[in-house]
Amino acid sequence: MPVMKTYRDHYFNKAKQDNYPARSVYKLEEIEKQSRLLTPGAAVLDLGACPGSWSLYAAKRVGPSGRVLAVDLNPAATAFPGNVTYLIGDMLEPGPDIAEAFERFGPFDVVLSDMAPKTIGHKFTDQARSLELCEAALSVAVTRLKPGGAFVVKIFQGPDSPAFQKGLRQYFSAVRVAKPKSSRAESKEIFFVATGFTAPVGQPDDPAPSPLPPND
Figure (cartoon, rainbow, N blue to C red):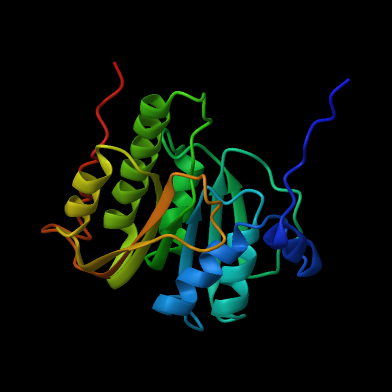
């Protein structure tokens, strides 16, 4: 009977040693070392937060005077510090509790999105679903970021990712691509790191329209 292989590498083992629930924390750590987005006292929104590594890291960076609002479809079996609020919700169909939390904890200095779709192994379908999540995250960012704020979003590389990157430049003064060393070599994920947010005309009183098509 074949034995199922469990992928354990340097970052997997390091996460366990550093008391983080997942190796993904080192992707954010590398991005942060390059961009210095998470400053003491900052307000951070973490989308796709489960199991909580990014939220824990962000909470440490912003300190007790900062705050982190974390949102994911799934509950996280992680003990968070007092400056983290974790909510369960769907960013494609956010309910009133999520909207209320955005109002209560925002506006935000940084919006992080590590959201990823459930992959089915079909490249173009997985890329399209990843783009949908990126558009949902961007819709939140442009309505909830402070002027000058930053947006970090994960996307699966595909034919539509360059257009999404170009679209970010409508709202941010600088956009760069990050491929952290802790991303597995075979992974198609990259991160767009957008800084210098400029609110669209009508912000903050009139929320920007969502880039997502309406559900029929």
